[in-house]
Amino acid sequence: MITLPYGAQDLEPVISERTIGFHHGKHLQAYVDNLNKMQPGSGLSQDLTLEEIVCKSNGGVFNNAGQILNHNLYFTQFCKGGKALADGSLKAQIVKQWGSLEAFQTEFVAKGVGLFGSGWVWLSAKSDGSLVITQEPGASNPITQGLKPLLTFDVWEHAYYLDYQNRRAAHLEALWQIVDWSVIEHRYK
Ligand SMILES: [Fe+2]
Image (cartoon, rainbow, N blue to C red; front, side, top):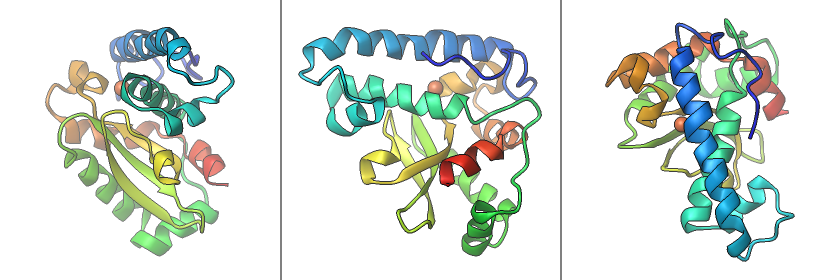
């Protein structure tokens, strides 16, 4: 179980302390507990990394391992007040493909809003360094398609319902205020 790299209040008002308490302390903890119960009987080696489990499993093991990986990447990409995207290879690639960071952000939020039901919207890198936005249902992660996941917004209702109720778009737009782009740049390299 990852520890958060910030205090539970530090992402307010974008994500409340109460939501962090349920999302990290209850939902993610439950996925960790479930996987720990399921993996011994799954036939999967105890030596596999979380990424390897996600790529090799299905059913309940996949759902819980995928959700752990997704949430690990999600919770560790934020910081108090956010950190801007600096000039560099990632910014250059975003501008090359979308024209501007703002245009990328607009499409990313639209894909999150347009995802039916529970899931995740992702920015990932292909092996040639180009970028792609994907919508992943349920517990899925772009690594199952050979992509390198960089940035994700959780569109499961548990991520926002306490603070935003049904207003998914308002929640996703607010998340830009707390994204730590230095983390995303590090993942891209
Ligand atoms: Fe979540």
